Image 1 (cartoon, rainbow, N blue to C red):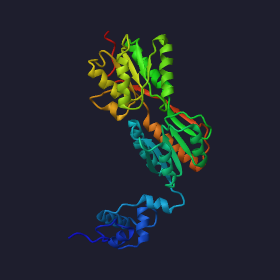
Image 2 (cartoon, helix red, strand yellow; image 1 turned 90 degrees about the vertical axis):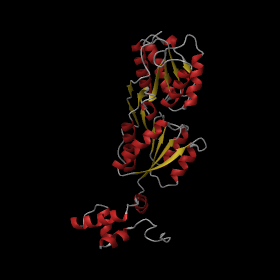
Image 3 (cartoon, rainbow, N blue to C red; image 1 turned 60 degrees about the vertical axis):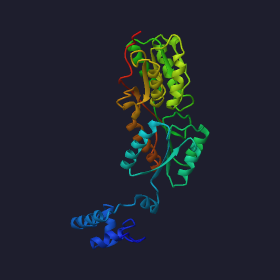
Image 4 (cartoon, rainbow, N blue to C red; image 1 turned 90 degrees about the horizontal axis):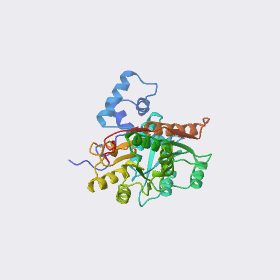
Length: 340
Protein backbone atom coordinates (compact mmCIF):
# COMPACT_ATOMS: atom_id res chain seq x y z
CA UNK A 1 0.00 0.00 0.00
CA UNK A 2 1.31 3.48 -0.86
CA UNK A 3 2.20 5.39 2.34
CA UNK A 4 0.01 8.37 3.20
CA UNK A 5 1.61 11.82 2.89
CA UNK A 6 3.18 12.68 6.21
CA UNK A 7 3.43 9.07 7.41
CA UNK A 8 6.71 7.77 8.89
CA UNK A 9 7.39 5.86 5.67
CA UNK A 10 7.27 9.01 3.52
CA UNK A 11 9.21 11.47 5.64
CA UNK A 12 12.72 11.75 6.99
CA UNK A 13 13.13 9.99 10.37
CA UNK A 14 13.60 12.36 13.31
CA UNK A 15 15.30 12.18 16.70
CA UNK A 16 11.85 11.48 18.19
CA UNK A 17 11.42 8.46 15.92
CA UNK A 18 14.80 7.09 16.99
CA UNK A 19 13.98 7.74 20.65
CA UNK A 20 10.68 5.86 20.34
CA UNK A 21 12.34 2.91 18.61
CA UNK A 22 15.16 2.72 21.19
CA UNK A 23 12.89 3.35 24.19
CA UNK A 24 14.87 6.36 25.45
CA UNK A 25 14.40 10.11 25.62
CA UNK A 26 15.00 12.49 22.73
CA UNK A 27 17.67 14.21 24.84
CA UNK A 28 19.53 10.93 25.22
CA UNK A 29 19.40 10.29 21.47
CA UNK A 30 20.83 13.78 20.92
CA UNK A 31 23.72 12.97 23.28
CA UNK A 32 24.51 9.80 21.36
CA UNK A 33 24.27 11.47 17.94
CA UNK A 34 26.61 14.25 19.07
CA UNK A 35 28.96 11.67 20.62
CA UNK A 36 28.76 13.68 23.84
CA UNK A 37 29.31 12.23 27.32
CA UNK A 38 26.26 11.12 29.33
CA UNK A 39 25.19 7.77 27.86
CA UNK A 40 26.34 4.22 28.60
CA UNK A 41 27.88 1.96 26.00
CA UNK A 42 24.78 -0.24 25.95
CA UNK A 43 22.50 2.76 25.42
CA UNK A 44 24.71 4.11 22.64
CA UNK A 45 24.59 0.75 20.89
CA UNK A 46 20.78 0.57 21.23
CA UNK A 47 20.30 4.10 19.90
CA UNK A 48 22.66 3.62 16.97
CA UNK A 49 20.95 0.34 16.05
CA UNK A 50 17.57 2.08 16.10
CA UNK A 51 18.91 4.93 13.97
CA UNK A 52 20.29 2.46 11.44
CA UNK A 53 17.03 0.51 11.27
CA UNK A 54 15.08 3.71 10.61
CA UNK A 55 17.62 5.10 8.17
CA UNK A 56 18.12 8.19 10.36
CA UNK A 57 20.87 10.61 9.32
CA UNK A 58 21.75 13.73 11.36
CA UNK A 59 20.79 16.96 9.56
CA UNK A 60 24.08 18.85 9.76
CA UNK A 61 22.69 21.94 8.03
CA UNK A 62 19.86 22.21 10.60
CA UNK A 63 22.41 21.85 13.40
CA UNK A 64 24.47 24.66 11.94
CA UNK A 65 21.47 26.94 11.56
CA UNK A 66 20.56 26.43 15.23
CA UNK A 67 24.05 27.36 16.38
CA UNK A 68 25.39 30.87 16.91
CA UNK A 69 27.80 30.28 14.04
CA UNK A 70 26.94 28.74 10.71
CA UNK A 71 30.39 27.18 10.17
CA UNK A 72 29.65 27.47 6.47
CA UNK A 73 32.35 28.35 3.98
CA UNK A 74 31.12 29.47 0.57
CA UNK A 75 32.99 28.29 -2.53
CA UNK A 76 32.70 29.85 -5.99
CA UNK A 77 33.93 27.68 -8.85
CA UNK A 78 33.64 27.63 -12.64
CA UNK A 79 31.89 24.63 -14.20
CA UNK A 80 33.89 25.04 -17.43
CA UNK A 81 37.22 24.59 -15.61
CA UNK A 82 37.98 20.86 -15.13
CA UNK A 83 40.62 21.61 -12.49
CA UNK A 84 38.06 23.39 -10.32
CA UNK A 85 36.22 20.09 -9.94
CA UNK A 86 39.37 18.54 -8.49
CA UNK A 87 39.77 21.48 -6.12
CA UNK A 88 36.16 21.22 -4.90
CA UNK A 89 36.73 17.58 -3.99
CA UNK A 90 39.80 18.52 -1.97
CA UNK A 91 37.97 21.38 -0.26
CA UNK A 92 35.29 19.00 0.99
CA UNK A 93 37.95 16.75 2.53
CA UNK A 94 39.69 19.72 4.17
CA UNK A 95 36.41 21.20 5.43
CA UNK A 96 35.32 17.90 6.97
CA UNK A 97 38.61 17.65 8.84
CA UNK A 98 38.16 21.20 10.17
CA UNK A 99 34.47 20.68 11.12
CA UNK A 100 33.17 23.12 8.51
CA UNK A 101 30.47 22.73 5.88
CA UNK A 102 30.72 23.98 2.30
CA UNK A 103 28.15 25.85 0.26
CA UNK A 104 28.89 25.76 -3.47
CA UNK A 105 27.92 28.36 -6.06
CA UNK A 106 28.83 27.83 -9.72
CA UNK A 107 29.90 30.26 -12.40
CA UNK A 108 28.41 29.23 -15.74
CA UNK A 109 28.16 30.90 -19.16
CA UNK A 110 24.87 32.41 -18.02
CA UNK A 111 25.75 33.04 -14.36
CA UNK A 112 28.60 35.40 -13.55
CA UNK A 113 30.84 35.56 -10.48
CA UNK A 114 28.97 38.38 -8.78
CA UNK A 115 25.72 36.46 -8.92
CA UNK A 116 27.47 33.35 -7.62
CA UNK A 117 28.91 35.33 -4.70
CA UNK A 118 25.59 37.03 -3.92
CA UNK A 119 23.95 33.62 -3.59
CA UNK A 120 26.50 32.61 -0.95
CA UNK A 121 26.17 35.86 0.97
CA UNK A 122 22.49 35.03 1.42
CA UNK A 123 23.35 31.58 2.80
CA UNK A 124 24.93 32.61 6.13
CA UNK A 125 28.45 31.85 4.93
CA UNK A 126 31.14 32.96 7.37
CA UNK A 127 33.95 33.04 4.80
CA UNK A 128 34.42 32.75 1.06
CA UNK A 129 36.86 30.76 -1.06
CA UNK A 130 36.97 31.84 -4.71
CA UNK A 131 38.61 29.53 -7.23
CA UNK A 132 40.42 31.43 -9.96
CA UNK A 133 38.14 34.50 -9.91
CA UNK A 134 38.14 36.97 -12.82
CA UNK A 135 36.65 39.82 -10.76
CA UNK A 136 38.70 43.02 -10.40
CA UNK A 137 40.83 43.52 -7.30
CA UNK A 138 38.58 46.36 -6.11
CA UNK A 139 35.60 43.98 -5.91
CA UNK A 140 37.63 41.33 -4.11
CA UNK A 141 38.78 43.94 -1.59
CA UNK A 142 35.14 44.92 -0.96
CA UNK A 143 34.30 41.29 -0.22
CA UNK A 144 37.33 40.92 2.05
CA UNK A 145 36.12 43.92 4.05
CA UNK A 146 32.87 42.04 4.80
CA UNK A 147 34.25 38.60 5.68
CA UNK A 148 37.38 36.44 5.38
CA UNK A 149 38.15 35.90 1.69
CA UNK A 150 40.60 33.38 0.27
CA UNK A 151 41.43 33.52 -3.44
CA UNK A 152 42.85 30.32 -4.92
CA UNK A 153 44.93 30.05 -8.11
CA UNK A 154 45.26 33.76 -8.80
CA UNK A 155 47.65 36.43 -7.54
CA UNK A 156 45.90 39.42 -5.97
CA UNK A 157 47.86 42.47 -4.85
CA UNK A 158 45.78 43.72 -1.94
CA UNK A 159 46.66 43.52 1.74
CA UNK A 160 43.16 42.33 2.84
CA UNK A 161 42.83 39.45 0.39
CA UNK A 162 44.38 36.09 1.28
CA UNK A 163 45.85 34.13 -1.62
CA UNK A 164 46.76 30.45 -1.97
CA UNK A 165 48.21 29.73 -5.41
CA UNK A 166 50.63 27.68 -7.44
CA UNK A 167 53.91 29.13 -8.67
CA UNK A 168 52.75 29.38 -12.31
CA UNK A 169 56.04 30.90 -13.49
CA UNK A 170 58.00 27.97 -12.08
CA UNK A 171 55.49 25.52 -13.56
CA UNK A 172 55.98 26.71 -17.13
CA UNK A 173 59.70 26.83 -16.47
CA UNK A 174 59.64 23.13 -15.58
CA UNK A 175 57.72 22.36 -18.78
CA UNK A 176 60.22 24.23 -20.96
CA UNK A 177 63.21 22.73 -19.12
CA UNK A 178 61.80 19.26 -19.84
CA UNK A 179 61.32 20.00 -23.53
CA UNK A 180 64.77 21.54 -23.95
CA UNK A 181 66.33 18.56 -22.17
CA UNK A 182 64.63 16.33 -24.76
CA UNK A 183 66.27 18.37 -27.51
CA UNK A 184 63.49 20.76 -28.54
CA UNK A 185 64.64 24.21 -29.64
CA UNK A 186 61.53 25.37 -31.53
CA UNK A 187 58.64 25.59 -29.09
CA UNK A 188 55.36 27.46 -28.83
CA UNK A 189 53.06 28.41 -25.97
CA UNK A 190 49.26 28.55 -26.27
CA UNK A 191 48.20 30.95 -23.56
CA UNK A 192 45.07 31.42 -21.47
CA UNK A 193 44.16 34.94 -22.58
CA UNK A 194 42.91 36.91 -19.58
CA UNK A 195 42.36 33.86 -17.38
CA UNK A 196 43.86 33.90 -13.87
CA UNK A 197 47.45 32.69 -13.99
CA UNK A 198 47.80 33.19 -17.76
CA UNK A 199 50.14 36.17 -17.50
CA UNK A 200 52.40 34.34 -15.05
CA UNK A 201 52.57 31.27 -17.30
CA UNK A 202 53.50 33.45 -20.28
CA UNK A 203 56.30 34.97 -18.20
CA UNK A 204 57.42 31.50 -17.15
CA UNK A 205 57.61 30.40 -20.78
CA UNK A 206 59.59 33.44 -21.91
CA UNK A 207 61.88 33.36 -18.90
CA UNK A 208 62.74 29.69 -19.33
CA UNK A 209 63.57 30.15 -23.01
CA UNK A 210 65.79 33.08 -22.09
CA UNK A 211 67.64 30.92 -19.55
CA UNK A 212 68.34 28.40 -22.29
CA UNK A 213 69.44 31.03 -24.81
CA UNK A 214 66.32 30.48 -26.93
CA UNK A 215 64.50 33.76 -26.32
CA UNK A 216 64.47 34.62 -30.04
CA UNK A 217 62.56 31.40 -30.75
CA UNK A 218 59.62 32.24 -28.43
CA UNK A 219 56.19 31.90 -30.04
CA UNK A 220 53.04 32.72 -28.08
CA UNK A 221 49.62 32.06 -29.59
CA UNK A 222 46.29 33.30 -28.15
CA UNK A 223 44.27 30.54 -26.49
CA UNK A 224 41.87 30.14 -23.60
CA UNK A 225 40.29 27.75 -21.14
CA UNK A 226 38.37 25.31 -23.34
CA UNK A 227 38.94 22.54 -25.88
CA UNK A 228 37.65 24.88 -28.60
CA UNK A 229 40.18 27.53 -27.62
CA UNK A 230 42.94 24.95 -27.86
CA UNK A 231 41.68 23.67 -31.20
CA UNK A 232 41.56 27.19 -32.67
CA UNK A 233 45.09 27.89 -31.47
CA UNK A 234 46.34 24.55 -32.82
CA UNK A 235 45.02 25.37 -36.30
CA UNK A 236 46.91 28.66 -36.15
CA UNK A 237 49.98 26.77 -34.95
CA UNK A 238 49.86 24.51 -38.02
CA UNK A 239 50.16 27.61 -40.23
CA UNK A 240 53.51 28.63 -38.70
CA UNK A 241 56.79 27.98 -40.54
CA UNK A 242 58.94 26.34 -39.52
CA UNK A 243 56.54 24.23 -37.46
CA UNK A 244 57.54 24.02 -33.77
CA UNK A 245 58.41 20.58 -32.45
CA UNK A 246 56.81 21.16 -29.05
CA UNK A 247 54.02 23.24 -27.49
CA UNK A 248 53.07 24.12 -23.93
CA UNK A 249 49.38 24.84 -23.31
CA UNK A 250 47.69 26.99 -20.65
CA UNK A 251 45.66 24.12 -19.19
CA UNK A 252 44.83 20.46 -19.74
CA UNK A 253 41.39 21.11 -21.18
CA UNK A 254 42.78 23.39 -23.87
CA UNK A 255 45.56 20.86 -24.49
CA UNK A 256 42.99 18.17 -25.36
CA UNK A 257 41.71 20.46 -28.12
CA UNK A 258 45.28 20.86 -29.36
CA UNK A 259 45.79 17.09 -29.40
CA UNK A 260 42.59 16.54 -31.37
CA UNK A 261 43.55 19.02 -34.11
CA UNK A 262 47.14 17.81 -34.38
CA UNK A 263 46.19 14.17 -34.69
CA UNK A 264 43.40 14.96 -37.16
CA UNK A 265 45.98 16.79 -39.30
CA UNK A 266 48.27 13.77 -39.32
CA UNK A 267 50.75 15.23 -36.82
CA UNK A 268 52.07 12.44 -34.65
CA UNK A 269 52.17 13.21 -30.92
CA UNK A 270 54.81 12.99 -29.57
CA UNK A 271 56.79 11.92 -32.66
CA UNK A 272 56.21 15.09 -34.68
CA UNK A 273 55.21 17.41 -31.86
CA UNK A 274 55.33 17.16 -28.07
CA UNK A 275 52.49 18.66 -26.01
CA UNK A 276 52.54 19.73 -22.35
CA UNK A 277 49.44 20.79 -20.41
CA UNK A 278 48.97 22.39 -17.01
CA UNK A 279 46.97 21.34 -13.90
CA UNK A 280 47.13 17.51 -13.98
CA UNK A 281 43.34 17.44 -14.02
CA UNK A 282 41.37 14.22 -14.44
CA UNK A 283 41.45 14.79 -18.21
CA UNK A 284 45.24 14.52 -18.28
CA UNK A 285 45.16 11.21 -16.40
CA UNK A 286 42.79 9.46 -18.82
CA UNK A 287 44.65 6.58 -20.45
CA UNK A 288 43.78 7.59 -24.02
CA UNK A 289 45.10 11.14 -23.39
CA UNK A 290 48.07 10.43 -21.07
CA UNK A 291 49.09 14.07 -21.13
CA UNK A 292 52.43 15.28 -19.86
CA UNK A 293 51.45 18.16 -17.61
CA UNK A 294 52.45 20.50 -14.81
CA UNK A 295 50.68 19.29 -11.67
CA UNK A 296 49.24 21.65 -9.12
CA UNK A 297 49.21 20.28 -5.58
CA UNK A 298 45.45 20.11 -4.96
CA UNK A 299 45.86 18.73 -1.44
CA UNK A 300 48.07 21.64 -0.41
CA UNK A 301 45.96 24.26 -2.19
CA UNK A 302 42.71 23.08 -0.64
CA UNK A 303 43.90 22.28 2.87
CA UNK A 304 45.70 25.61 3.15
CA UNK A 305 42.67 27.48 1.80
CA UNK A 306 40.32 26.01 4.41
CA UNK A 307 42.94 26.45 7.14
CA UNK A 308 43.39 30.12 6.21
CA UNK A 309 39.62 30.78 6.24
CA UNK A 310 39.32 29.05 9.62
CA UNK A 311 42.29 30.99 11.01
CA UNK A 312 40.71 34.30 9.97
CA UNK A 313 37.42 33.29 11.60
CA UNK A 314 39.23 32.29 14.79
CA UNK A 315 41.17 35.57 14.89
CA UNK A 316 44.55 33.83 14.61
CA UNK A 317 47.60 35.85 13.66
CA UNK A 318 48.52 35.64 9.96
CA UNK A 319 52.12 36.27 9.00
CA UNK A 320 51.94 35.67 5.24
CA UNK A 321 48.98 36.95 3.24
CA UNK A 322 49.99 34.93 0.16
CA UNK A 323 51.13 31.32 0.13
CA UNK A 324 52.74 30.07 -3.10
CA UNK A 325 52.86 26.30 -3.65
CA UNK A 326 55.53 24.74 -5.90
CA UNK A 327 54.24 22.65 -8.84
CA UNK A 328 55.83 19.54 -10.30
CA UNK A 329 56.01 18.11 -13.81
CA UNK A 330 54.37 14.76 -14.54
CA UNK A 331 55.74 13.07 -17.65
CA UNK A 332 53.34 10.87 -19.60
CA UNK A 333 52.96 9.96 -23.25
CA UNK A 334 52.76 13.28 -25.08
CA UNK A 335 56.41 14.31 -24.91
CA UNK A 336 59.48 12.77 -26.52
CA UNK A 337 62.68 13.88 -28.29
CA UNK A 338 62.07 15.59 -31.63
CA UNK A 339 62.35 13.36 -34.71
CA UNK A 340 62.92 16.14 -37.26
